Length: 309
Image 1 (cartoon, rainbow, N blue to C red):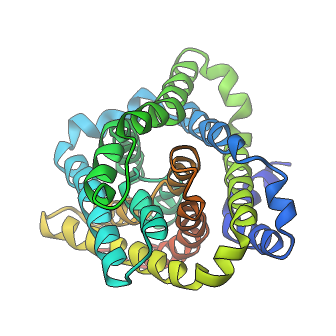
Image 2 (cartoon, rainbow, N blue to C red):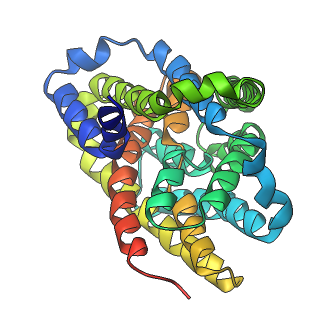
């Protein structure tokens, strides 16, 4: 059972591609899950993340504040700016552009911690950066979305703040507190958490793909190209930024991965809950969820074989 549970998160890209393909072929399978379930599923993922956090995970915030500051700043500067530039360069429609911008304005994804570990990067730094960017998301994600997308659409900033707090902040805090006070019991379920989070992400992807199957068939290739460029450029610029400020090899790997991998599940949930009149805005988040696990696995393999000086 443990081997099977470990197999699920390691093969999230394969599982997600298969399920997305089925949802494209038979959209009714994806639409069987109402989009109203996406936010609770993401909250479940964030709760699982909180259960995996310990107070010691925040130690780098105080012992290596420079590394944390560089990573988090890059997260909320590079990826939003890249997203905006790409929507203009590829002349995306307002609906598709919103989806790309939402992905760019979200915090780092939990998958980045697994990829950083496989890449032999600084895992403690990766976890701390994910936690810090997640805690800042209720404020920065709505404000950055307003700044970058507000010129063409109405952005419900306060509603987004409340939604991100409910979907991200509260579940993460609840999971962290439960793990802190009842870690003995949490340890019994620890093997199930990554698999549970993976399956929840796959269900979200399947639902979004099923609901937008026709639009994906017509514009999916363009959005996929934009998503791939966004992700790969994030890795490269995160790497360059970390090098520029003189971080060590393991830290450079962690920052590069953290910047490039976004919490695309949150972007998808926000698109569905806050921009219901623009359903195609969820496409970018769904595609990013699949793509960054593929690119992350390749990058981890490349980094793991190199001891960056």
